[in-house]
Length: 286
Image 1 (cartoon, helix red, strand yellow):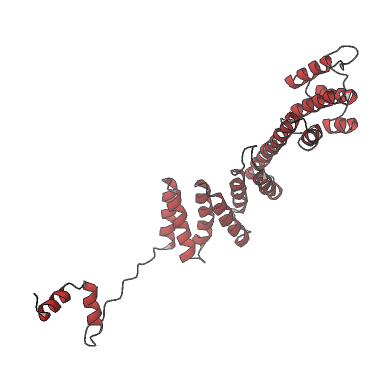
Image 2 (cartoon, helix red, strand yellow):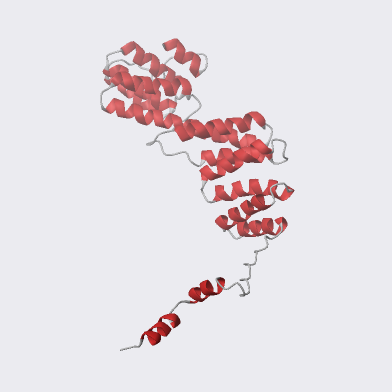
């Protein structure tokens, strides 16, 4: 059996080093512990160049952090201004679109006269555009993308950014029209003809520059024949034939008219030509 004094000595030796520090801190004659050394922040130029190097190496997360450090530590420097837009670009390349939009929004608000402001608007619009989902899902992102792209067109119409934004608006509109068609087809399959007509008419009226108009006119003619609305079917087919005479949609539509006994009396495959643009023709029908 250990004596009490030996047991106390063993317990003392078993204390961790932190215990010795605690005991020494109670000693008024002990030397004070040295303060931890502060890590020096590299100059703004060094941080910025590290970010550029990381971008070149496709280390986008590292690049974004380096640019963020520039803004945090040197917020009033010219390096910080450039770093902000570069951070937005790095976040965009990471597909962190929400973060990129926030960063670019801040840049646009703080530096509206910057020489790269057009690019900032364009990059923000791209971050919205990349979030456009397929036609099976909600299209709110498509609407937001079109709004951001339109702002680029309005502000910078003569720039390469404005021209590309205009092209992307057309693609986004085609995407929205595709969504309307997808819903209209579902209503048609469910025999919900009024709802289907509304969707297909919307494509014809609001998305006339898209690739979906010919099918929308074909579907409308199909529904009118099913409902026994022969005159409306003929008129809609005439609009389709005038604007898309060589399309497969018109060929199918004309075959449907023949099958329903609603073809033109002279038996010609091409309905009589009608003057005016598609919008004027469509409004004359309804």
